[in-house]
Structure formats: C-alpha cells, structure tokens
Image 1 (cartoon, protein in one colour):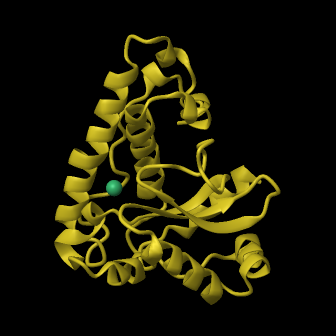
Image 2 (image 1 turned 180 degrees about the vertical axis):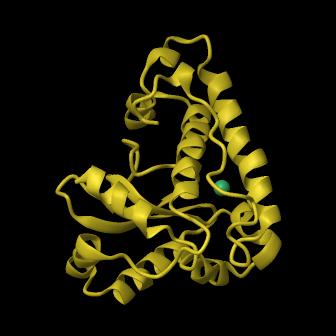
Length: 208
Ligand code: MN
C-alpha cells in the first residue's frame, strides 16, 4: 500500500467476515469500524488530495513527509493506513504466541513474551484519549513498543518514536465501546485471542 500511487489507492475489503473475531471483538463493532470509520478516513483523505499534485506521490512518500501537509491529510491518511494494517494482524482463531525467529527476537528485546505483552498492554491502556499501541522495528532493527496519539503512524516524520509497524492495536473508543464501554483493559486483554502471528511474522521479516 505504501508503494501505491495515491490516486490509485482503493478501499480494501475486510479479509474476513464481520463476525470472525467474536466473541472478542463483536460483529457490529467490526462492521461499523470498517464501513463507517475506516471508509470515512479513506474518503476524506482521497477528497483532500484529489486534483492536487500530491495524488501522484506514492502513499508512503506522503506519510513519511506528513509534517508538510495539513492536519486533515495527516489524520485521514493515517486513519486509512493504520486500519489496513490492523485488520490484517487479526484473524479468526488467532492468538497464541509467535514462533521461531520472531519469538526469539521478542525474548531478546523484552526478556520474555509475557514481559512484551505487559509493555504493550501498558502502552495501550495508558494512551490518553484516542490513539494506537504498536510493536515496531526501528531503524537500528530493534523491536520497540510504542504508542501514538490520534491517527499518527510510526511511519510519520512527526512520530516521537519512528519505525516500521509490525503489530497494532486501535484504542479509540469506537474500536471497543459497544461491547466493553469504558473497560479498555478488557478489550486489550481480549485482543490477544485474535492476533494473527503469521502476519506479524511476515511484517517483521519484510521490515528486517
Ligand atoms: Mn479505528
């Protein structure tokens, strides 16, 4: 997606049914999240760049130079990009733990899988207001846990901690409020049951 010319970006369908992540993430939340929230980010982003010279850039080029663009492009471009990754790193009957080299890299970086999960949970729970928790590979090829506000991405030049996102968790209220209301920690715990570790592994290997 980052290599795609902006004017050729298409809105992706969900890689599974809206009920695939039940009971951890409910079907109604998934449907509204995908068809309303994600779609609105895409539509508003495309409207903002359509007919400007920016539509001929690669999407990644714009994202990595986002400080030069207005807030609407940053928020909606980020929202479009972040959700595309988020859908893919989840699946029906996901969960468990990473295997092989990724498992070893997580142990080396954080001490153990449990310690990594604790750090990630803290990043997700402590993000004040709306935003995302991330596992990223930074420019020195180290795994790091971080979080961003709003729809900022670790790809963006404005991000405090920059790198390639490997795993993402949306902690906007629209991602969990219908089922979990104010109980963000319950949603964060449930998320681990739907993680698609094969996809996370692919993200990590292509970032290396
Ligand atoms: Mn969202």
